Length: 204
Image 1 (cartoon, rainbow, N blue to C red):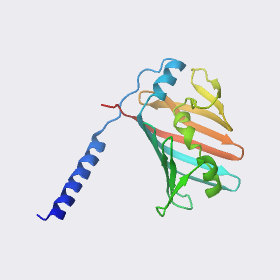
Image 2 (cartoon, rainbow, N blue to C red; image 1 turned 30 degrees about the vertical axis):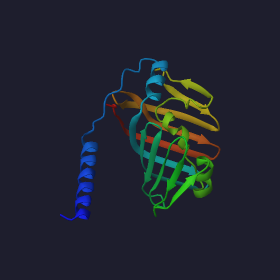
Image 3 (spheres, rainbow, N blue to C red; image 1 turned 90 degrees about the horizontal axis):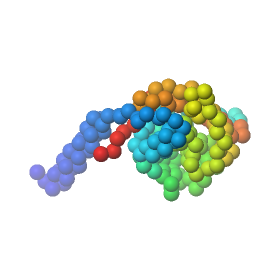
Image 4 (cartoon, rainbow, N blue to C red; image 1 turned 120 degrees about the vertical axis):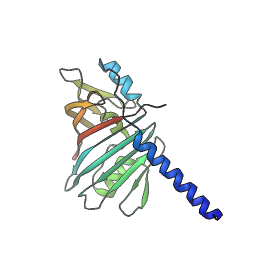
């Protein structure tokens, strides 16, 4: 076997092993979220999780509805929106230092101010920095928050920065009650999430 063929074979084998590992990695149940302090501490500390669902965004005459997959891995996040967007699928990903958006043609743009830059590019925006916390039903710890709770002691509404967030429904996710329907509004910009399923993973 020629050296270049050997290298390709090894790369293919490693890729297949990685895919197999991802396919067999199972979700785990969350610990008991018995009160607000415990809920905030445990969920904010989760390092590897994702959810899938649907998203609707509107701002003035602009907007879309589509499918959403959001994944968090330590400080890294990836948000993929697909469906009848008019411009195809987009991917927004990054960490605390750098956020990029990749359009349907594979063109990548670095976002200096994600919320502002998305609005400038598409006419709408998504609160990508705080979304990881709001989707979990907890405030972003980096921003002062005004909170209101439902009769079960879960977050019902939240104000952070220019955003007003309402969580209208919870249901099971990872063995605990997790947000199902969420709306975030800032000015004329509205983001609606309908979360179909959650996956939480335990680090070895």
